[in-house]
Image (cartoon, rainbow, N blue to C red; front, side):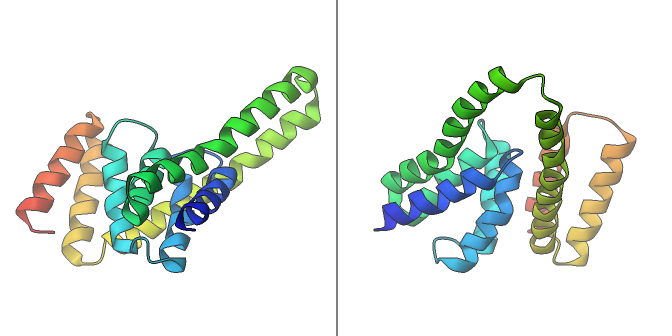
Length: 172
């Protein structure tokens, strides 16, 4: 039963998370409230791990959530559930695009999806910030690192490493 539930829930996420891995975050927060598979705090850890490991963020998060809830088979089922809608839609859209590639209405529909994707990503960022920035020290560190990123355009890896070292040193 858990496997069917994982497949169904992650299929829904894969179906509606248009725009990339971070768009899955609001849906995962809903899962954290709905099931006892993982907590919201564990979800922020999943996001950090998924951001820093190779591969698509959404797939990494689905794999981790599936593993956390039902072991290796759960990881496989959740990942499959997340990816399956994309495969189906890509095949379907590719056929339609061949047929309607010059249609202005098709172009308008694709342009209309952009604001929704932006809203989902913004919502995900605010959810993560609400959990991660729960004290003055965290807020100060965030503001300092954000300012440094704006002033000195260096590799994001440098700032991730710096944040990790500061987090460990300050026991955040």
